[in-house]
Length: 427
Image 1 (tube, rainbow, N blue to C red):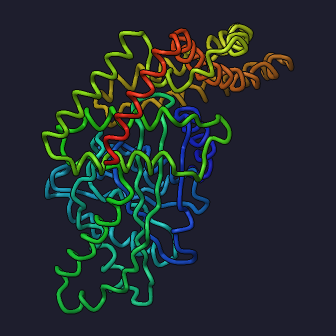
Image 2 (cartoon, rainbow, N blue to C red):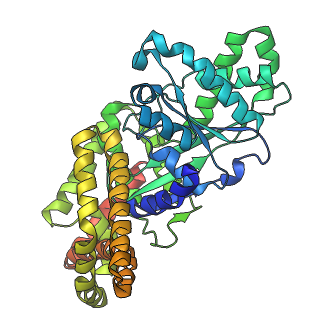
Image 3 (cartoon, rainbow, N blue to C red):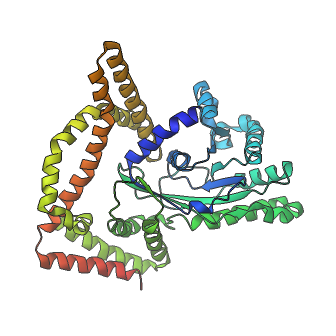
């Protein structure tokens, strides 16, 4: 009940937080089969929320058990939103491990009903662009379910979830469904050697999931790769509507960047980093950004007119909607200081406080008998979204305007240097 009630509001909140949500290859999910969606885990709980909102069939999830143990309220919430706790020794100690038998039984039941089950297979969340080792729990759940229900045709679908920057408001999310694994193909190995089958299935899961994740192999290369990922991102200018799209051009481009840099020798990486840094420093010297260089068309007179005409309505939208959003972000920073939890917590708290304000004002208007008040309250979300759209456009205008002020020779030199950098990765 709560799952169905929350879902549309969560979809709106995620659509406001992200500038675009790309969800590609949904057709890879088998129809009328028991499915496990095996996803990576770069944020606290944004990944499950995106899939729950944009996949038609309701999902069940496996979530951290330490939160379940420590709060009676959270136990109820887990049940209401279809989450099943998993207990790990490092989180809850040995005493709660026995509770995993009940967790496994719930998973077997979910799969037997052909309901999709989402598992964050890395086990831990870390804000980075690399795939960490896959835990064996997913494979154990599969074989446990097959022992209990031998006729099940379970498929594991790898789901790569990538962000341009999950901690940044109006960033981009990219969801990639991969080639499914038919688990029945491992039955013969399992009957001969259970540990071997678990290891083989886990390795195959990691292999297929890695194809759908932007994976920087070495932490030392993070800064270099990010410079080039930004070049690819800035070549995309997604429209506001629709919020989601099935395209995957940005993911493919950024995935290639990471893979090419992973293959470079250390000396080549250092040379490339020096050259990329010089490019960004030259942009800064001219007080422009790479994004502005790509958005010079937004620096036109007509764009300026739109910025001017939209300023007052946008300011009104900001003032009418800012309090719950600001307060939600403030609370998130206080109670969730780690980067992995901050964005997810801000979305939750801001959405809750915004809903409290919205329905509170509606109730006040009803009690006072002011019909016009109700109409104004109903316009609040529209004014808030106008402000967000205006802010997106104004930032494009500002960046494009700064770049457009440069003389043609400087622009051409910067564009040539930019293209030269990109060509270095294609050699």
